[in-house]
Every structure is written in C-alpha cells, then in structure tokens.
Amino acid sequence: MKKGFTLIELLAVIVILAIISLIAVPMVLSVIETSKKQAAEVSANNYLDALSNSSLYSDLEGTAVLEEGTYLVSDLEEKFGSLLKGELPTKGTVTIDANGNIESASICINDYKVDYSDTTATIDETNNCDAVVDSLDDTTLYEDSNAIYFNPETGKKCIAAEAVSTVGTKTGCMKWYAFNDEEGATTINLILDHNTSQDVAFNSNNDSSVMNEVAVALSNDTATWKDEYNPRLITAFEIAQIVGFTSFSQTGSEVYIDTLTTTAPATLSDYHYGWLYDRLNTSCVVGSNCWNDAEDNEITNNMWAYWTSTSRWGSVWVMDRSSRIHSALPTNTDGIGVRPVITIPKALIK
Image 1 (cartoon, one colour):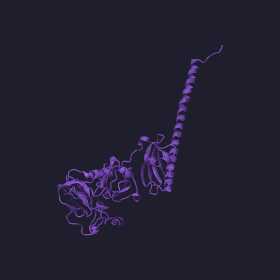
Image 2 (spheres, rainbow, N blue to C red):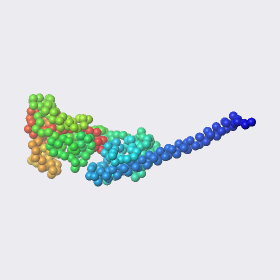
Image 3 (cartoon, one colour):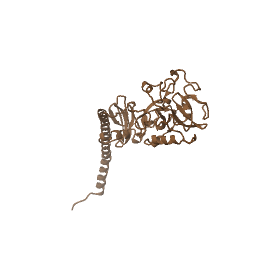
Image 4 (cartoon, rainbow, N blue to C red):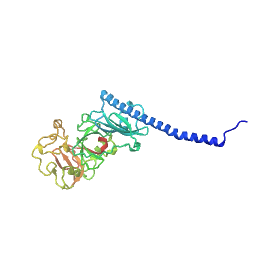
C-alpha cells in the first residue's frame, strides 16, 4: 500500500517554495528592471545618435540645421521625423551647443527619465518621467529693439539669411523687433520691421474711432498667420512707453520720439529709435533708417508712416520716418501703411 505525503510534509514543501520565491522573485524582477533600464539607455543613445545624423544629413542637403538652443522632442520629431528610427521619446528636451552638437538632454523614453551629458545617456534613479518637461516656458527678458527672426505662419524661429523685409511681404521668415517686455513674462510683443500694406486709409468715412480699411488690410495681410498670435496695430501709448514719454496723452502734443520735444534731432547720432520707423522711405536728412545698416539706407519706397490704433481729436496717431509721432486724418491714404504687431510665447524663439 502506497503512502501519500503527510500534512506536515506538504506544509514543509510549501514553506520551502515560499522561501525560494521570496529569494528568487525579487532577483528576477531586479534583472527585468535592469534590462528595461539598459534598454531605455540604449534607445536614448540611438535616438540622440539618429538626431545627430539627421542634423548632419539636413546640413548636407542644404536645409536648415539646428541653431544653438533648447528644443522639445516633439518639435524635433516634426523636423526630422522621417529620419528618426526606433523607439522615440514621448517628451523631453534636447539642448544644442553653438557648434550644432547635442550638449545635453532630458527625455522620457520607455517610461524612464534619461539624462544625457558628456556623450553618455544615463537613467536618473531619483526621478521618473513626471520630472521631464513637455513645454519650454521661457521668461528671458528682451530689450527693446532686439531683432527676432520669426515665421508667423509656421510658428518657428528662423535666421537672418532667410528673412525678407521688402514692403508688402506678408509670409515666411521676417524680421521683428521686441518691445515693452516685462520681468517674468512668458510672452513677448514683436513689431514687424516693414509695412505689409501701403497707402491704406484708417477709415474712409472719416471716423477716427473705428478701424475700417486698415482693419481689413490687417486681416488680409495676416490671414495665414497663427490666430493665437493676435495680429494687431501698435498703440501710441506703447510707443510712448518704449521711448519713456511719460507725459503722453491721447490728445497731447505731437513729438519727435528721439527728443521727446517738437524739435527734430540735430544730428544723426541723436536718432536712437530708428527701429520704430525702419524700412520707411529713406531720408538721411531726417534720420530715417540712417541709424541702421547700409542695406536699409538703400530703400526707396513711398512709405513714410504707419498707423497706430489710437485716435486723436478726429485724427489718428501715426509713426513716421522722421522719428515723429503725430496725427493724420483717418481718410489719408498717401504713404501710410499697416505694420503688424504680434504677441508670441518666448519659448518659440528661445
């Protein structure tokens, strides 16, 4: 007659198996975890290598390469998507140095936070992917007149060599000037360096309180721009803030913004705010564009001013080529144009 296991023997086997499990399972899980981390590191290195190769390929193809700065991985995937292979990060940032090489990175890949520096990718043992940023809020303080090259259709920063400043240019890469920035702000105001339309009335019905033809022209000129940039005209108050004209009032005196008086600057060296009347009809006698470079001094168009959105005693404030902010009848179409202003996140131009 065969004997079975006694209850005590079965309990002993169960206890032994439990002890083995307590020892083995953590070891197996540790091996799995280590393998996943190593795979994440390998994937991160492969991604960054592919990114470097994609940038080099773009350079050889003659397309735009990465400028110095920090980029979201989502933007990089949009730029180089067809050239990037394998496991891609779900979020994070990559920083490019002045030579176009990857300086550092902090990315989430395979649910692990991977940091990259000194050509090596390592798992951050103290943080998970929650610590990886997926936006680039920037609070850099921009001085008035800082030149920014930006495409309002694509929402992308561009370079000076790509920018077009010809009067009437409404699309593509263009030159802008920052103004009235504030400490801690994450957005920046930009004014274009040229008029997008010329010879436009403010309101042909002679109503200075309502933007009519100029509003239509502004809407048409910016139709392909991203709506969130809120294209508009600069106000006379904003110009006054730029030049420190603290006593300015809507119905006050017309002045030259470089002297804050009714007297024009005496010499060319007295013109400091030429960027506010850039690309208007050249006349070194009155300082227009002479503050800038030789390229600007060659301009010959009939643009002498642009509209603000601020009315004044039945007329409208305009900024003209002589550095003077003064008023014009809303029906005036002779040489006055549209110069758009936009407000964008600073992260886009970081």
